[in-house]
Image 1 (cartoon, rainbow, N blue to C red):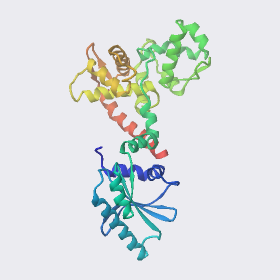
Image 2 (tube, one colour; image 1 turned 180 degrees about the vertical axis):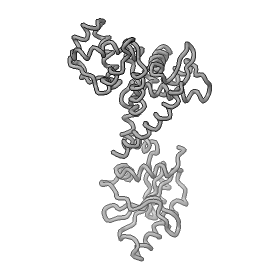
Image 3 (spheres, rainbow, N blue to C red; image 1 turned 120 degrees about the vertical axis):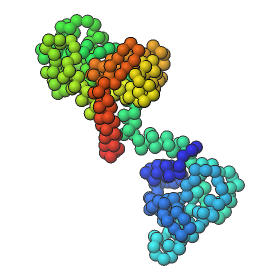
Image 4 (cartoon, rainbow, N blue to C red; image 1 turned 135 degrees about the vertical axis):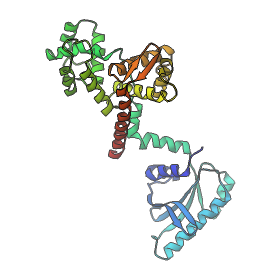
Length: 344
């Protein structure tokens, strides 16, 4: 594997449990220091374990005989520090961590008191992703979904009726159409953060954002998305891009167009369809060309509804608002991820 040793070291340092498993210990060792400068060089890691000190030298390459002498020199340096009273007392046990070592080389090392432990760099990197990055993987695993709503303004008719009733059954009677269609619209509005609703319950209310959205309607053309409503949803997307699958999908669509614009502009819809599928993590869900075209069309429609891009039959363009949106989006996404790591 091509990777710097320091990157593996960083993961081991931050994961006492992983170091315990790598060394096959009964308890987690405690770190004293890393990259410690001694007369013969710079040792990677120094731990305490019960009454012993563990000197650990990490290698990403295959075994070489000079590694044994390197570790022994570090041990001698540490023993000298102990005699001078500059290091806590305890038996110093040297370890070599290697991706692989054969029986003969292991025996040669252990004959002079150096224990060799094998580790799998790929397993350590997978551990880091699944354990240490758990706050981030929540965001990474969130993906756009297809609810069957082609444009944002299609939810307006039933949302405006929430000023009169909070019953889903009554809404269906008022708006007409199938129950499935209404539920799709409700789910879509929930994804946008406009409604409070527990699935399968009859009671539904406008959220605070939803009330702002309704108050911003175009009184002359209620079945369209007003400019003020577009601003409200844009703000929701850019400030909380991980709020829901639909909102993340809108954000991802604009990011895709921006990325592809570096190669050619305007951006071809055909190119956008495949790129958006991969970028949003839907490769295994949208496997056919039809599914990819369907998903890209839906989310590009939402982005166009919000004024973030413009579309023709073949191409898409970023608007001035769209360019500004991308810059703000990157900032807010970074802040959300950083805050997540800090809290956890």
